[in-house]
Length: 116
Length: 112
Image 1 (cartoon, each protein chain N blue to C red):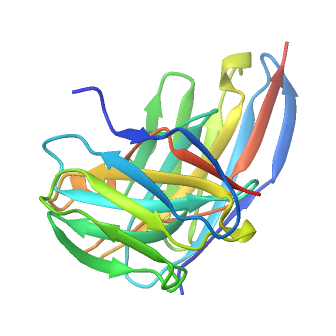
Image 2: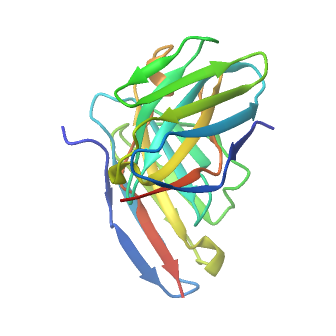
């Protein structure tokens, strides 16, 4: 297992277009997280899955954002009708469950979105 | 709302210097504090701290937590150019999701 994999690594799109990012977590991890990071800021939590169930969504996640993890393995994050303010790095992370292990998130390299 | 503040925002030192990075936090029902290093790509895990006063150490890096004063420090001794990165502090609440709340990071640049 090579860690958390995200693609595409870079996406440039025009305002109003839809984009989708994919995340493949570490195979034995049942928790999966999406974060957004803008320049000069720390990652901000967007949403979290335990297996296929989406258990938490941030209020940052507008109705243009949707995330799925249909079989409890890979996840997709779709942004509809993109806006320039959506330009950011979208980070995926995974972790095992359990009292202490769940806190240690392993991050992917991120998908950088630029909305023109 | 959970909050994490890191200082300084950025720091420039020369190789061999020692640096101390600060992280203060407010969190409802604290579980743990974590430090990550972020170079150009993914944040990579450094330390997880759950108990006050117990130093975690890995090579030239060390960290300690003060749960009474709600802060942590990350020390790097004998800095090298490879230490140049953004250092992120995050807190985990004691709830089912354990969603980390991150600070804004400290950008460290080590000059040769």
